[in-house]
Image (cartoon, rainbow, N blue to C red; front, side):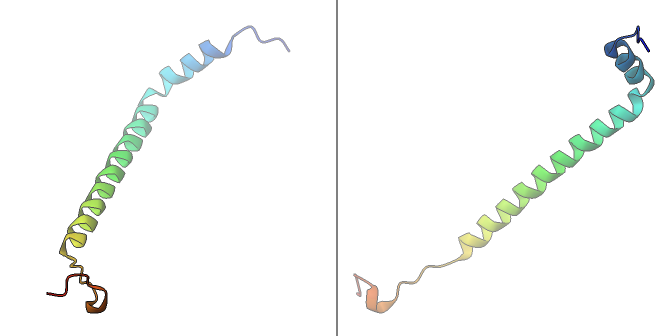
Length: 67
């Protein structure tokens, strides 16, 4: 069997026929990526806010300046 059509014209034709599903998939992936970045940034800010509440107390026995 000899194929006279190349893969680029067939891929181009398939893409033209299925442009809407391809575009929807790309938009959904982009939104998921952006949401993931937002949630990661929110988690980072929550961790930093929690760490800002911590106080560090040195043990009296190891404190070089007791008074």
